[in-house]
Length: 309
Image 1 (cartoon, rainbow, N blue to C red):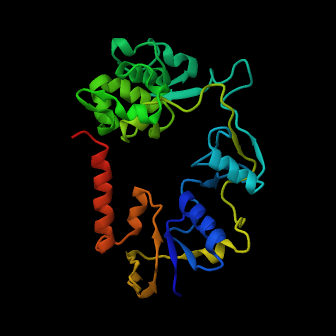
Image 2 (tube, rainbow, N blue to C red):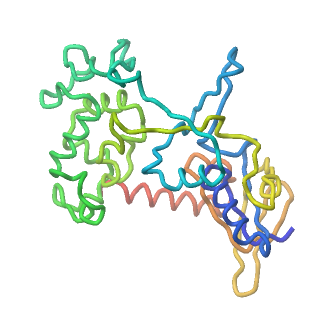
Image 3 (cartoon, rainbow, N blue to C red):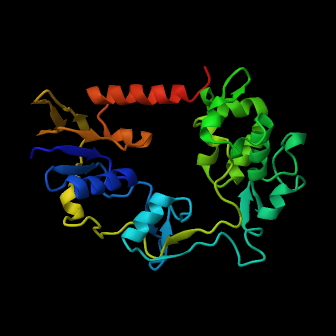
């Protein structure tokens, strides 16, 4: 089968890209979505817990903010998926203040995270009395007051410690302004490793995109299902099981088409490709392939770009 576009990686971005391409070009182009695992969805993953057949647990994405996650909200509305509220705590006036935390062998409530006598972290004196979110806000404002209210363009112009802030990885910057125990407290109690991951400092410094009053929604049913939203086609027509490693992908160049090869013996011409592949998914690529070397080089370049020189 001669393909015009191969979308490699059936996570959220891959499945969405293939669906949009199929809707826009499906009548004239042959589009295929390749996924190495046995399911589509990536970080959107619903599981049934042992002994609780009627409980659907989300171990990936579990909620969204309708006023801020515009693409997600628009897609949910377009597909007419039923939604429900996703409260982050008890009903008012208690709210999230009594949410439970388990930190270094101690059970704490959210409101206790600002009590230095109860928090099991030996933070610096300037970090005491602050919960994980307020600690990150303080760090951000110490680096540059009002940083979170600046536009991205203005944030990119800021210089700290002698160089533009965008040249710092988040860890390299925190090393200069936060104690190790303070960082561990933010990481353990903040709820998401992504909030303190070593991404570019410009994107990581703003502490959070929501407050205690933010309204969240979630789907009334599981996020992963067999429903096919693509008009005029099925998920099966967009998906090919590929229980082998990708070896090479080529593009059409001046009328010629190099081969995409999948071990053990499968060859197909591909005229275009799209790679919505997270770093962990690179395990699906054969380590001795030419493409693996290019991907590794690109990942190293990106990581180096996000760290301090």
